[in-house]
Image (cartoon, rainbow, N blue to C red; front, top):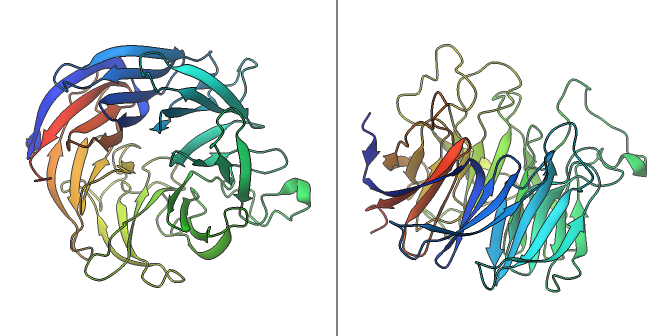
Length: 376
């Protein structure tokens, strides 16, 4: 397979591996995978010559591998990473980045247990996946950050059985993985929630303080990969409401071929229906199971039209056009170099900027900045 299709490499940032990349204007934010590296900030006004302008570290035993920015506010996660974590505390770090080269901590929102994993942020509310006092596993929560000095919980939702302190009976076999909200994504008055091996949920959040279940679906019995992301399309495609669902190629319930992406018709949101799937051509889906992190990971939560960039672990960047959601097709790709000391690439997250330039972070090392012709 050629290294690239309809893409060209602009530059590479030599930096520790990361969990998420995000662009605000001409500033790139990288959330790193391993301490002491927390968040790095780069000036990308010239994407061929990115320039680091700030860095925030975290103590050993914690990581800060997710980052989102809106309206001059940056939020980063604090999540336990290892067994011997010092007293730092899980939650969210909230920063003023109106001057990106001079990030200033505004406040820290704390939660019990391991901390916060992934989240959505619209500049006013953060839709997060924290552990919380009295609950088993991660739940869904909304924070009001309109006053970033004093973050305020607006509402929460959980799978019945998680609220141990409330006396809820735990209904699952102990051998089944603990419920874990991976992250919620909001579109309008709906929230689309990935819940790892407990599947996906669509919630009515017209009243953010009282989320209401609309529907749920779990494919983990037949396909043993955890549900990672539920990405709704803002426009109809072929006259249908569409949701892209990425399963992550890790933590499989039993040995199986690599994970892939699903396309769901949610025109009747009470009954999500899978109408197609996408897997990278050339991956063996019928033979012996392959190592974890061979298949799918994460679609970009920013995209143009019907073309969605994906971080596909060892398969690098994949540009997938779902204009016809019944027949998704790859229209471009880029295979990054293997980081030094690794056996293969591990593309973990991807985003785009307003120019259509793509930013692909490897969980082991480095960020690649890529141009493409497919966005037009």
